[in-house]
Length: 292
Image (tube, rainbow, N blue to C red; front, side):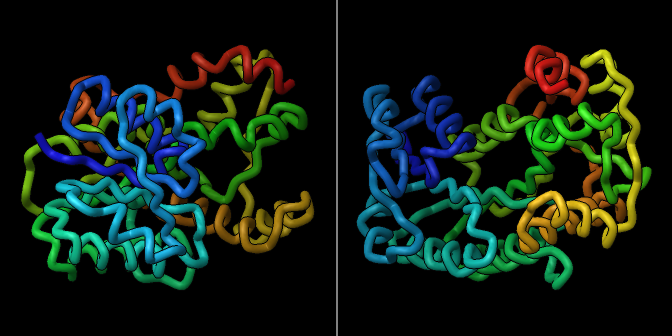
């Protein structure tokens, strides 16, 4: 059985992957984290805990010792994560890791218009250029959970502002992404592949507004805005410029069709159909109604 390491194990996605691997008795499971206290419960369940801090290279060699397969979960440090993750890739190659699974994003590409797409692209390139024998890039589409983040204001005002236009997004739940990542990490695949991880079908923001409004019992209208107008609105609402730029770039990607791809990856790896946006929102009925 392989020794499997999951970085970012204290986060939502990493924790879910570790729990799936432990439940499936997939091998020796290592929970990598900057703060071991945050994953003490995973240790109780049977995971080995190792301190791995991407900003402290001295933790990488010891943390990766004896690891066969590594799940590198992209960090949220958007301005520095390319360098952070390159260090991990280099350390993994030096440690003799045989396979790396990396959580990327749709349409990762070199661009000055999207820090998200750009940082993922250069991490993918570092993995491909390394001496690590095999790798799997999981281009996770936008999480369905993100819908809830902007829903409260939309439900209160009755207006849902985006810069996506009429384009669709194929939202995927974090739970489905975790199931795919766990399966890819625990598999014996030793080649190289890029997989788009998506929901069952793209939905538009008009559809999101209608679904959320129906659940909440209140009419909600999607209001398409030009990117600059959305950016100014987000900043006016108190969001820092940097984060406003990230969110607007995400919407522009969607408007240009980058988020509308549909694949059978969830079914192929998790053995079930991916959760639809409608089913996801209906499962959050109490939380959505509480937003009104």
